[in-house]
Image 1 (cartoon, helix red, strand yellow):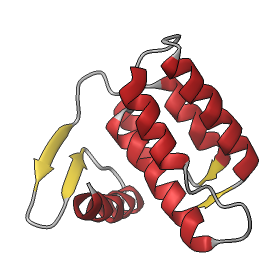
Image 2: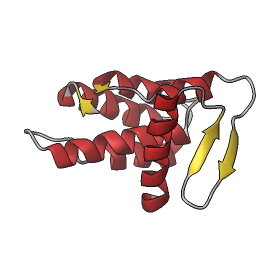
Image 3: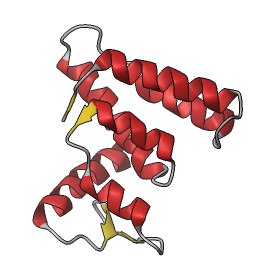
Image 4: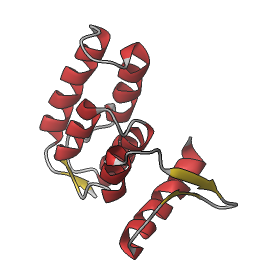
Length: 129
């Protein structure tokens, strides 16, 4: 996954942070800080490491807050949105979460590709959260 437009992502993030701090949208200071943390390594030039770090942190926010519309807007600047995020957000009942020794899986996962993406993200999340 990669950032399609770093400037657009930064601008969208700054507007979101300001709206959260001004209490124009739900989430408050805590979510504003999480967004700032996720975006503080946006690459200025070609830097795959900081780009990947930023993408992973934005995805992490999506998984933590799947119902938050403004956070989903950040994903339009990232190529390859995780399909499971949209499905969990659209689900009528909360997804069942099953804890295993190595990873956390959100069920139901209907395709091998979604399951593979979810497993990779879950491994990242369990190491870094």
